[in-house]
Length: 182
Image (tube, rainbow, N blue to C red):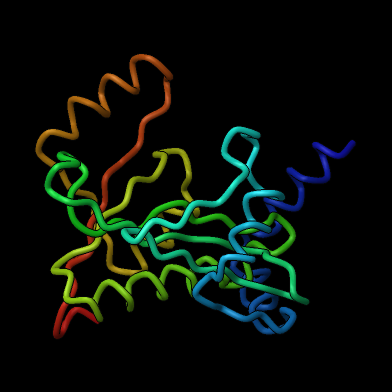
């Protein structure tokens, strides 16, 4: 029964009329750079891998949360990869998640904008991400936010290998930042 309800809710959340109404009627939501206690809450309630429950600060990562009623309802990261992480180099939008009851309310868009603004503020020339090709809602959001599919040297072979092993393909996308990119 729960599966049917969840599938029904997801279909409803995909409708433009629902999205407009939900964005207008949504509860008060705060969008903040995560503090240590936010990350501890996130890892204890959202992380399925018990080995990774504890939070360790990483200076190359900025975490953002969306909170409703003091509870985390959305999460995203800005990850800065050095050249030594080839082919994952530069600024990356990573890990966008919104709790199911809160989807369709514009939370993913606002969290993504926090990452875009932070990367732009730091002078990043571009922002990259990977998204599952079957996640049409996320791809649509990223296109609205001016991300375009790209080929990233060194990454295509890795993504092809991942696809042959898992049957799941991720698509690299990029947004150019800087003056006039908004």
